[in-house]
Length: 284
Image (cartoon, rainbow, N blue to C red):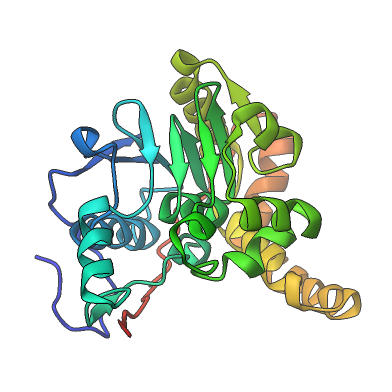
């Protein structure tokens, strides 16, 4: 069973029917599974999803994570029934402990979105938190907040300009207009657009290439470098890379990477247990 101690890292995967989990040769696929509600977000789904992300971070058998949705939608945001209750109560949310909506950024393994349909609100925040995203030609995107009388939530006003530039971020946040997958690709919101039946195979092929050829330790460092360097100067970034170079220079993955290249064989890198703990906080 999963520990109830809030300071203990999660190592067991939550058991929840509305989040499907499939592990295939190093790749963990998490599927939001509320197709009858278009995979709209709930607090129970939130617990299962973020709990599973953290468990995967702490599972050395998992080297990459793919997130998608069941049916024709990815995630249109918070379930409308919950939004209606909040609006009637005159408060944005009940008092309860919530996960950071950007938890995927803390996972030291590649988290790749396979955006199969509508992506809005909290679903859009998840997209912005992924390391990469592939989208179906049927996918549609909107921040939605300005059309619901809400501010830009969950640091999206900080992430989005860094991902797609200030002008594009202002456009999507102020207008909350719906954009197509092609436009999302043009502005850099997603990495690739493919036909619906090719979305999961294409995303999984990319994830399996990472699993087969890339050092988990290297990927963990690189992900952290890229995200942390958003707030560093160029010189601070250079100095940090020198420290990491010295550390990785004596890491077994460096020797294996060199030897496998010289011997023209697949590398055999060790898995990564991140010992990650992400605390919840009271949402007021």
